[in-house]
Length: 350
Image 1 (cartoon, helix red, strand yellow):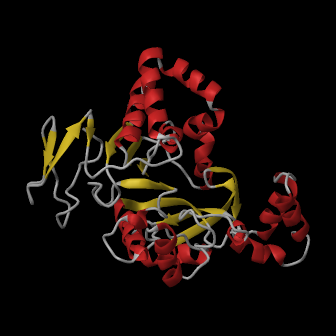
Image 2 (image 1 turned 180 degrees about the horizontal axis):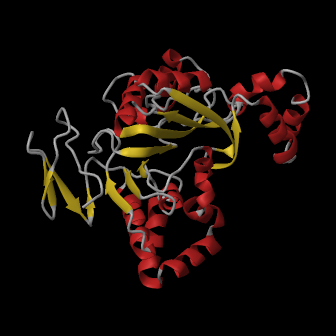
Image 3 (image 1 turned 135 degrees about the vertical axis):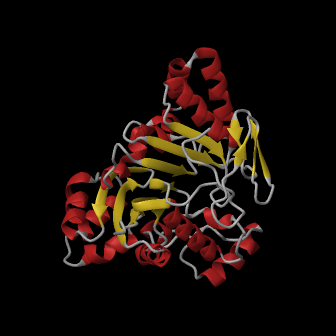
């Protein structure tokens, strides 16, 4: 079924689920989950993401009729940007920021179309992946089977209801997920949802385990210039929460629950969850393509990256390069960098 024994997400403690070929049942609360289209389903599903669902279904149909390689080639010719977003291992270059071991068991939470799952599967012993969308989970399962990646398990779930036992993973991947997880209304306050999730990640990790979070900076300079965050509106990430939530309800008739934070906020979230060591990297050009990882505490590394590695195109980059020559500016600028790769480490217990 899977390399991880499923446990009931609703019962207290790790109550192991009893499975048959097409259903799983909890012996504690008698709740039942079904297998549909070859996938275990543990929550209500929803499709979202950069690849429209119909486009992904068309690709899956092409794979079935043309084969994987021919379908990938055809897709790349039509849409190279989305092709790279789906298939480029560079999406997971954050992996160079931590020590990935061949014996690691990785949890790719909200795996999407599997870019991180497939970038990691040849480097570790096993990857367990799940997504809120059945279509995306089916795509990951299809690709894994066609590529012969037998160390990948896939199921459908949201993180809150994922039936996973404690102390089971060496690495947990949260790429572009933490900001969205506050949409679950288990608590009225989205930040409390994020706090619960952070503590849950700590519980799921083995001693010595690492939690990776790829995410935007709430205070990114682009937001001050009118850039839109996940609300689809300008300036909402900069507003105090007591203002941004009613403002979004007024402008878009929906609550503002997609919280991002600054560097101190992410560190506090992880520390409060129990993580003993936290490492923050600035990502360039962004966390979705982290080609350059810059340690937050290394001003020389930031200066070198700006001067030698970043391009000169556009007035913003030229302006930043000019500012970087002024003493002390970079110490302030790093707090306004666009996005981060953050690693929370659960230290080994003696």
